[in-house]
Amino acid sequence: MKKLFYLFVLLNSLAYCQITIQINNLPISTPLNSTIYIAGTMNNWSPNDLNYIMQPINNYWQISIPEGIGSLEFKFTRGSWSSVEGNSLGTYLPNRTVTFTGVPQVINLNILSWEDISGSSNQSTAASNVQILNSQFFMPQLDRYRRIWLYLPPDYNTTTKHYPVLYMQDGQNLFDNATSYAGEWQVDETLNSLFNQGDYGAIVVGIDNGGSERINEYSPWINSQYGGGQGSNYMNFIATTLKPFIDSNFRTRPEPKMNALIGSSMGALISTYGACEFPSSFQKVGSFSAAYWFALGELNSYIASNQNLFDTHRAYFVAGQNEYTTIVGDISGVVTNLQSKGLLSTNTLTKFDSYGTHSESYWRGEFAAAYLWLFQNENLEIETNFKSNAKIYQTNSGKIILEGFDECVQFELYNLLGQKAGQFKWKNGENYLDNSLTKGIYFLKYENNPSKFVKIFKN
Image (tube, rainbow, N blue to C red; front, side, top):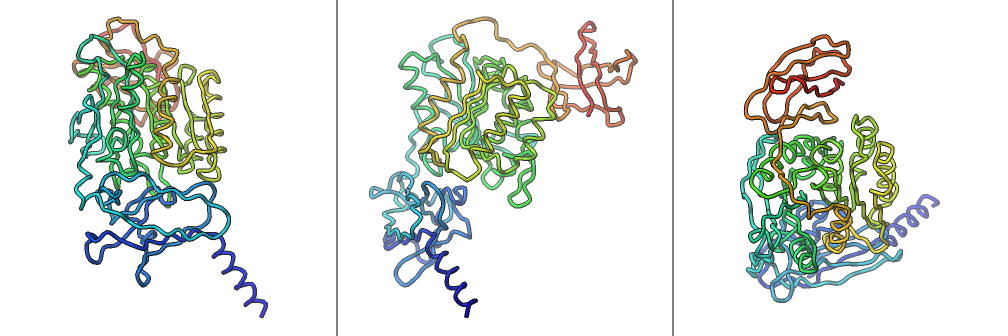
């Protein structure tokens, strides 16, 4: 009898702590036997998550979401973001929102339209100074192709100015409702408005996420449950392929202090890693609602063992206090770790908002402040010869990066005793020390500048 009583209490408590979402009506245009999914902050906005299928019950569709903290944002789809629900006119519908209250709730809703059937999903909201740089930009480090977006400041074609550059993740969501899966950031409208108020201007390079490869590409480390592991190659692509291309073809400020990596959620994880791995390319970080939990131990160990100092970096961290239970502690721990490696408190801004949600709408509202703060101490008016000279630098993981050389270069390697330890030829891009070398500090000497030595290390 006791067991039955405890079972009753358990079932009653489970029913108590949930939100039941119920769809009462579908558009008449809904294809027969469609599967209806709910996508939102509870499942990282996956449009076809088999765990979040609306179950048909009599004449309505229903799902129960476990109780959480703060707000839940969501939309309904038929399995992809191209078949997302729309408003009464068949156009873009903002995220739906419901607030957890600690008591059971039943939310009755109607789906008014589907964007793909209404034909509205192709209506672009991108500003005229946004373009698709390349719909199939090759990523040699990953052997795949990716769409790249480009925002140029309003005065780009009427001046000779050189601009800082923002490299932003999840390019689909930055400029255009037609391609976004949960609403756009309005980066173009925001920067155009700031420019009209006197802002110097910046170039934005948006890199589409890889869809099913997004999680794999946005973490250098593997999470046993969710994947990952391709983040090192992805960041190599941005630093050693995409950035050199942008600097060669557009009027940029190639100095690391003029280049930012910005992303949200997993995009914040890979942006933080990228600024640590390639400090000679990126010294600004915009971290929005960082999903550091995905590889928290690995990220902190990586920062702690990093050979580089971050005393010239500048980083902006923003998140909602209740996006997930450990988010404040996770971000605070990473910030403390970065500061132990030289990141100055004056170059760090950490903001936790009571109203913050894990959503494009929240990040859209925070973007302008982050951008202005990251570059507020830079004198962008100074015009000099910005042509990038040949350079050599090493990433924390040990790769040797060559940029700006015309051909293969002959190198000699010396140990701390001045003894020659090797001789080899390297070319632009990624290069590696011989595995047979013992761990320690070495010096590179190269033929076209015999008086210059580059200090490197072998892990």
